[in-house]
Length: 368
Length: 126
Image (cartoon, rainbow over all chains, first blue to last red; front, side):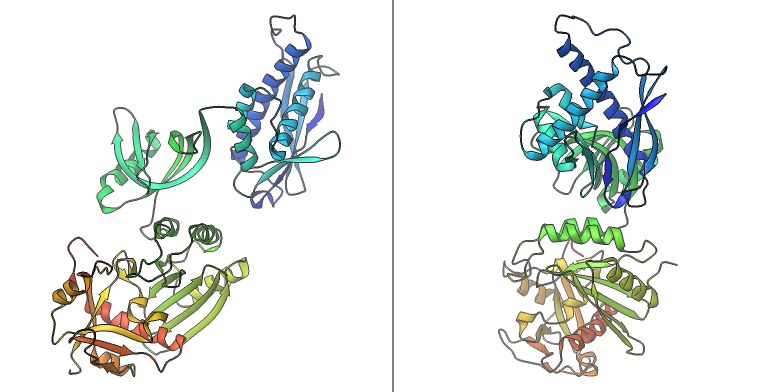
């Protein structure tokens, strides 16, 4: 038998098709572990004279995902139990659910959560899969709601007083060291930080290739879970899920490089592009630039913007991007017949990017 | 100056990515008063032009590219032998053209210069 237990509403672009990425199921598995431990804590509070938690405390009780409802995406989590009614201990699970949601609400409101620090430590894994702009919304008994998002999770982890915590990351860098005997390698970030990472068989050849080409500037993208300290600095990789060699024209890598420019970069003149605007442009590019198109060369402009350029046969094509407005001035010139195409694109929305993609395709911008 | 005279242009390191130079290197910036600074290649070697330019600690260059006087003339761009701030200095005058036209001409000059290749590359650069 089962009964409804929890229906958090997931909000964000990844959930807009009323589906949930499989990788987020790890977060719900962590939530189940957290619920059991918080339920045991509630039991101990209710039975202060009991020295031990009864064996098989959670036996017969399991949380299952029974479906995904509409409304961005709402996973329907039910409590499964043997027999016709839930076991006696089920009540502690319900209290645990309330306390966990209360803790999220406290963090969201900037107050101290009441859960003990060791139990708040579970937020290291529960909520880790949420990206910027995503959240899980929980209903509270009084009818209000509260949201767990990356910022709230960070606040909960700070309350947990842990020295090291983890984050799902996608980091670009060079492989400065590879040790096959110890099955590890080091990723060197742009700022010189070196992160040790486990080296598994499935990533071995990619890692060794990038290590060999270190001096030629070979970069890779590592996706996995990284440990951070309380100062929010990366320490090392806990797990590595993907290692991907990067194109030498990788847009995000180049924009990261241009973020280090200072005002006066052009022989005493030249405004530096603002790093937060470059991050915004990188995200827009990542989300909207068609994968089959040839990547541009990217350069700073003297006015603090970015100019993307493509040399496509007889066509010389530029896109000058004003980072204050994300307006792009596009110009393609055919050097053989002097034919010219000029457009202004609004790069804040998908329509502008679609027009850019189409314009590039029309001058031979698609990869063969 | 003859049509074959090469006009030497210093290339800023941030104007090069993976060996490719931006067309911005071949048009004046808004603060250049519509004139692109070059050196007369008949009167100065590329290496010497680079050495003079980078002797000012505020100025950076990874090397020298060039367009010819004839290539400028084909784009209706006058080359002025202004001799200021030093004798070999010249300016390519974009002042009669509006922004989009300037960009078109810069694309043509850039392709021609890159087809010609580097005349001088600083050690360890480009």
